Amino acid sequence: MAFVKVTKSRSFTKSLSYRIFGTLSSFAVVFVITGEGVLSALIAFWETVVKVGIYYWHERIWDKISWGRKTN
Image (cartoon, rainbow, N blue to C red):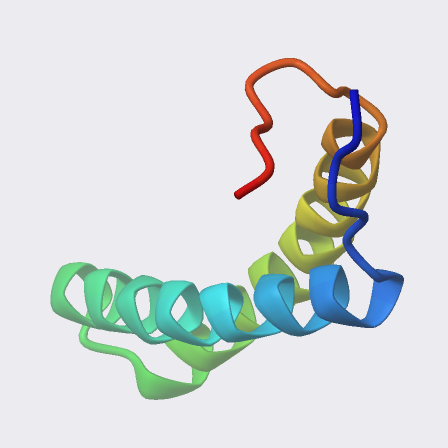
């Protein structure tokens, strides 16, 4: 069974773009709760750093799993 490989740069770019939206939503939630822009930015920044790494490795692991893939 042939399946399409996903490059590491694609996985990283996807994780980064996903986290941009996640960071903006995290900032907004913390800001609504605390009303503090600096705290909101700090939490959103560190959440992004951690979650980009987690998502990248999650993508790389799933790239090794052929289950559920189809070729056209």
